[in-house]
Amino acid sequence: MKKVVFLPLIFISCFFLGGCAGSAASAEEYFAIGMAYFELGKYEEAEKWLTRARQSNRTMVASTYNLGRLAFEMGRYEDAARHFESILRRDRENVLALKAAAYSRIMTGDMENAERHYAKLLELVPESADSGYNHALVLFAMERYADAETVLERYPVALLENNDNLLLYARVRAALNKVEAIDHFAAWLETNSNPKVRYEFGQSLEKHNFYARALGEYRKAYADSTAASVDPKRSDVRFAIARVLLIADGSSGEGITELQGAITEGFNNIASVEGLVSRVSGSNRETIRNIINSLRQASETNP
Image (cartoon, rainbow, N blue to C red; front, side):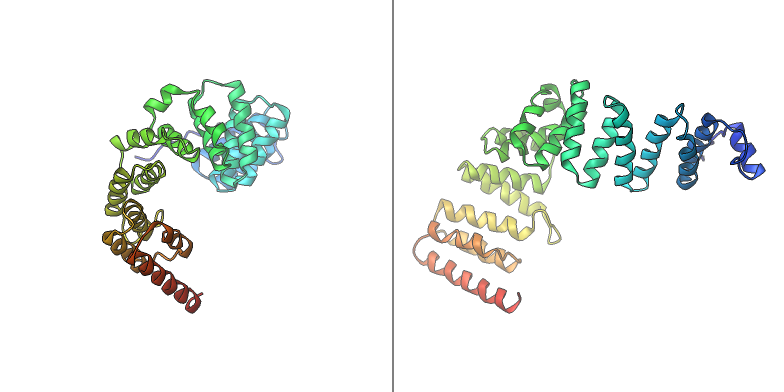
């Protein structure tokens, strides 16, 4: 059943009389018409009427806020952010405008302004775990890992109960090279499954020399990935398997087999392969040097 939208009387009159531009309609009526069009999904008409309503002090803030919502719905994130921020220039403590401006700035890629809005928002509503998560997410994107960790730790209950918070916490602590990240990844994977997260878990384990566990996670990530996987690529996961095998045993034949398999599947990071030379011994060292030469020749042939 379609949703029935009941329109204000002024909207019906304007529709049948050919518009109210020259009528004595009030700003509140313009606002009501604009919001009725918004509910109908007629965004261009809604924008027209809300712009009129914004001319009055009585409906300026509400109209500007909803013009921001309209712009966001239409994918015009820069316009949306400008609308919300125009409210903040008059009222820096408007919580709704702060939330909307912060999220719009994430969508425009302006992390500095997004972070500024979230910082102010959490001054006003410090108990908001959702805003805290978003703030930490922005800080993580800015590579301010210690600050992100501090923000997340203000919400211990959310870390225990919210999977998104827990995963971000694991990633933040991994970026800080903290061994505790291992426990957070493991806790997340108890109730979730994702090859990218398993790969990250394997990297954290490998970084702290838990090679057997790292190998197990890399193998699971490889099994769960496909040839179409991008982040990480299947060939990258297979190279990680080879790397761990060769680190654990420099003369490992299985490690060389996995390395050759990774190359066959498209792995072509010469610098990463060169990093293995000092970690292998005997005939494996010569084999890897030959692989490096082949990769260089291929890159010269297909730059």
